[in-house]
Length: 450
Image 1 (tube, rainbow, N blue to C red):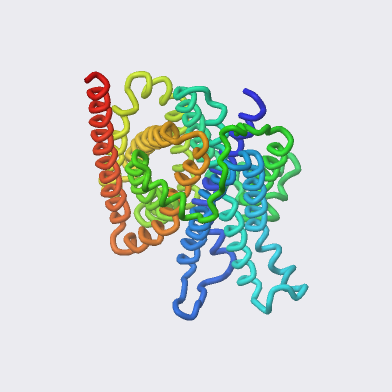
Image 2: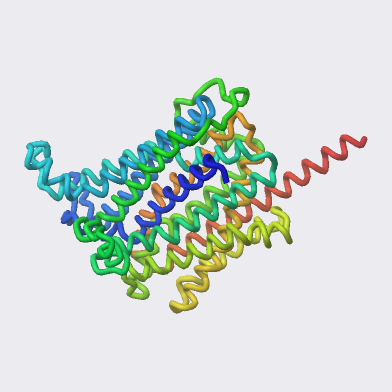
């Protein structure tokens, strides 16, 4: 594997690693700040609301910036935008992880605007998420880079498979790293102490996972700067850059072929971010099974192992070997929808089994849908289109955890039933679009032979 591809895959890994760390650890880190509520005048946010908003603000800003950064990469190349995004990720995580240590220093030196230290720390958490959100174009830029160097449709599918495998690996090591680093008496903390690095967990505690992720992102930024060549050829560069972050979204939904695929992807993204990619998973398992953060971390780690196996091996060696993409896409969505219905109504063992099945089916659906979007996007707009794809996930994550949290407070199963309904809708949209495309292709062949 060449250096450029290694840097790109490392970029995706660190992106997902950070997300894996956040899901089980972030609520407890926010609780440790010492802010019990925040009075905004028109409403009072509880500490649980603050956790949700910290998830949402990153996603909202990422939604606004990702298509724009993708468009910039189409105009100026992948390399500079990727380096900018990586630097933002590094700074955002480091600021987030050092908030509890920086806040007293700011207060002592009169830079805290007269606020209490816990409130300063909370503002630094938000600032860290804002910076990371504004520069969250590294995933779509990495995707565009791999697609630029892919020679055909098969290599494109393999590229998405590799990204999916790295995504799975990030969810293996992210939760595990977060849970282990956050506890001063964990196996990893004791192992670090044995090699003279015990200060990482002992000194920083719950902050340690975020600081470690920030340092890894910083190293990734340096590796991209020194080892990553440009992949986007001059003849494929766009002539203009969209300054309106909403325009690529509107453009995508007006695309004669891509619009239905984007709609299905958006519905699926709402379903996924309402259940697994946010605080709801931790809250549900704590409520139903009395899970601790370590239990959540272990479950997500097992899911990551299965996801890496599915997307790194099974996609190429089994799914796409025995079935076509068209044969897999709708059933993958349908199976996930059925799983969402069953999941809140079973014991912990069957919960884990259904979790694994949903992970397999959504992994297949994700790769096939992204590959379909990439194949139908022209080279000069691919960065913008893939940025839009990521932007839709971030838009879903900007509001779905809040809605799911309200549903959870009514009935623990409601977020999963909502996810099932949306996933079935996505399957229906894909099925109707496939029929429409088949008719268009049949009419085209008929016209060509007449």
